[in-house]
Length: 112
Length: 116
Image (cartoon, rainbow over all chains, first blue to last red; front, side, top):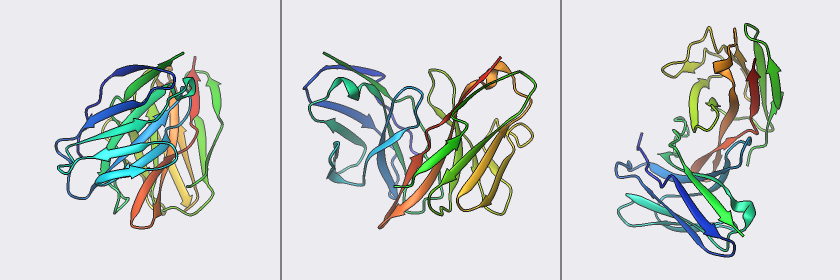
């Protein structure tokens, strides 16, 4: 399974756009990139998933360059409630048979 | 997305006892997984719960310690046996659900276990 590398932590002020970049140099052809958000004592919450270029939903955007060796999660205008740990994972989401393997994640702290 | 519930949401147990955690999904799913998250750590996969056959365990986890049942496509249980304080963790159930051409993995709310 492709391994991911993310910054351990990030700080941001309320109202700013936050971009969290994840490296996955060994991503396989069938791998998708998925991001989760986790609050303390809760299960990870699915944010966004993509394969290439750009994906946007009501919560975030995901930017994936052509070589797919990295990806960037963009959170527009963060608020205090966005303080959480964000995980970037890669895996074959076509078969759905292989569970995702979690790295350490990025702890985002939003400051008023 | 799949709606996943877990029971109990939390428990405090004495060492040497066992606890069974239930995971219920609102739709039939083929793949179900159990993860553990120790305090301050990331998630670690315990096993894949296979319907109609024995679970598949990851390195470092054994069936005698973490027996798993999967009687149907919407339900699974994980038992933490002969508990010690080192078993204090959040235990999470996870399922894979398809949407179009790709699948997505979803997680339950977790069961917070404290072993005294």
